Amino acid sequence: MNTARSANGGSGITTSALTFGGDVPPITTATEEWTGAGAPVGAWSTGGSMNTARAQNAGAGASNASGLTFGGSPIPGVAGKTELYDGTSWTEVNDLNKGGAEMGGTGTVTSALAFGREDPLPPTGVNPDNLTESWNGTNWTEVNNLNTARSRMGSAGVSNTSALAFGGTPSGTATESWNGTNWTTVNSLNDDRWGLTGNGTQTSALAAGGIDGPTTNTANTESWNGTNWTEVNNLNTGRRELASSGADNTSALAFGGESNPTTKVAITEEWNGVSWAETSDLNTANNNLAGNGTATSALAYGGNNPAPVTTATEEWNVPSNTVKTLTD
Image (cartoon, rainbow, N blue to C red):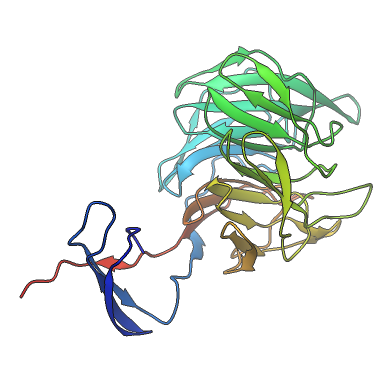
């Protein structure tokens, strides 16, 4: 329901029902109307394309109408580029000070954090970095570094003063917490992995998927309570290089990725705090993409590795039930 309550009244059938009154507290007059045979089902739709095609990019933002993407590959073409989404179109804004791919990203379009990354070494190869940059809505500023250089990590956080970095390569299980000034090493993940995804806050986060060992994709999911990681129910499909969205460790969306080293997937799964359930797929199978938002309002953008990388954006929306006030 839209409003949590107890001792409320109800009437109707599974496809047409009402709930009314109850104790919130205080006691309420609110009435909600239900239409349909089950919970509203979300769906992906096409959004506005990015200006620069990229994969292995990072993202931040609170909904499908508000997104920020930065970094990515191929390098050097897009490594520092930053774009802002307003629900319709992407606009280029000021670049990162130092570009790279496979970095962590958290926060909102006016208060974000970028940390870690892969910085290429000529002529080939990668070099995990510990650089951190803070976004104030206009510019990126270099701030204190991660304690452990890494890339392909999971990340969570709500602003440029509160974030969590976990897993990745070569750090494996290392977790660090950001307080707006410094990174502090905290309790590690139980499962050593990279190419995972993460969502939530500094005190309530979720880590899912990734690659465990040289070639084995994992479905492993762990929940963070602000102190420790706890293993919980797995994804239905193990994969790496996926993206996710979600406000905390009780609700999340995981989408895209690689089910094995050569197969991109469109699979989308919803987390309800206990288990994952498969739901409506992305319109296009995709890996190495970025995402932001919540479990009911999210964005997916970029990705597609190996090339050609894409500018495509998809918007996730879950319709809500209707709240009506009844009169005599």
